[in-house]
Image (cartoon, rainbow, N blue to C red; front, side, top):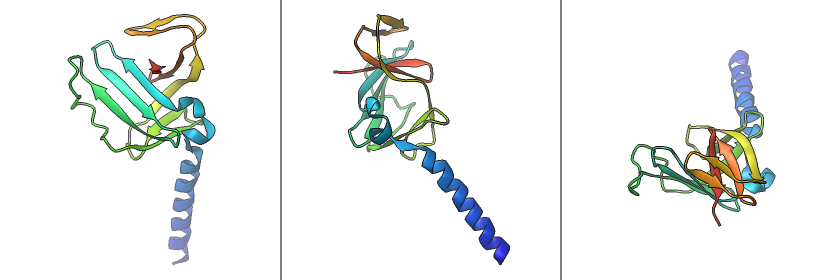
Length: 136
């Protein structure tokens, strides 16, 4: 019995240690807050909405403007979290983790990447090697 209780305690502590690394973005990384978009080379447009309390959504549209059924992230807002150790961004209970290659920053010069053009002075970040630009 004592071994079972010990095993349960160790397992629970491992899960709590992992979840402690993830921080709600509005607390530690407020530069993420806002509306972001990225256009992929296939014409797909990704919209990320990150609210001031870390709640937000992911919307993906096909090149023709229709809602993408290939990328189903749901319509209900979920909490955005960032894990600085793994450099991963997650949206609620979605199992997919997004690798953040660069935290939000201000462009000093024009950056052209695929269909994305980031003008000097605009905010952007890089996730899964794609540039996301902050919408005004």
